[in-house]
Image (tube, rainbow, N blue to C red; front, side, top):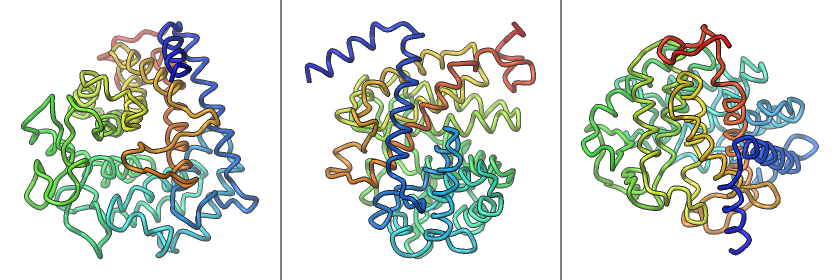
Length: 369
C-alpha cells in the first residue's frame, strides 16, 4: 500500500507531458500482455473456459497488430461464430444468454470491420438488428430470445449503435439514438442518480430482479456502475459526427457531467474498476468539443490508468463482482482498458487541433493554427 500511495503522489505531481508519456507506457504494457495470451493458431488463453476474447480483434487492430488481430479473428470465426453472425452454443455464448446478449456481437463487428472482414461485420450487425433490437424502442435486449424479459440497458444498446455507425447501418444507429433520447428525458433524479435501463413499462427505476447494481447508479456512492456515462458519450459523440444532431452532443455532455461531478470513490480502483469508460467517452467528446472540459477529464483518467494497471500490464474486473478472475477475465479487461487508453492518447495528441471539417468546429471555435 505504501508503494501505491507513493505512485499516486507521483502521478498527481506530473506535468501533462509526463502523464502522456506514462500513458504510452501503459498502452505498451497492455499490448505486450495481450500478445502473450494468443496461441499459434490464434486461440486466446482460457477460450475454452469463457468468452472474454470478443474485444481482442478490435484492440489489436487499433494497436497496429493486424497480423495478430487477423489470426484471432479467424479463430473466432471458426470456433465461436455461426455462418449467419451469431455466437455458437456452448462456451462462446454461455456468458451472454441471460445478460448483455449483444455486447460480443457489437465489439466483434467493429473489430472485423477494422480488419476489412466486411462479410463478418455485416452479418454480426444484421443478427443484432433483426433479432436483438427492440423494433419499438431501438434498445438492445438484455437477454437472448430464450431468456428474454424485455429489459434494455445503456451499454449494450450504445455498443450496438456504435457498431451500426461503423458499418453504415444508420437505421440501427438512428433507433439507438431515439432510445437514448427517451431514456434521458424520462430521468427523474438527475444529477445524483441515473437509471440506465428501459423495460416493457418504460424507464426502470426499481430493480425487480437481481439487477440493482445495473438498474440504479447513484453517483454519490461507491461501487456503482460508473461506466454508463462514458459509453453513452462515446456513442452520442460519434452519432453527432455523423448526423450533426445537436441533441446528441447535448446529452453526451450531460452524461459526462454526471461522472465529473460524482464521488471521488469512482477512482478507487481497489474497490471498483467501473469508471474505466469515462476516459473513452471523454476522448470521443473532446473530438467534437476541443474547447470543453473533456481534456481535463482525460488527464484525470490518465492518472487512473497509470495507477490501476498491474505490474504485468494487465487489469482484472472489480473484485466485488469477480472474486477469482482467470485469464479470460484478464483478457476481457486488459483488452478494454488498452483500447480506451489508445483512444485517449489519440485525442490528447491532436483532438484539440482538428480542422474545419470537424463536426463541432463552428461551436467549438477552433482555428486552423
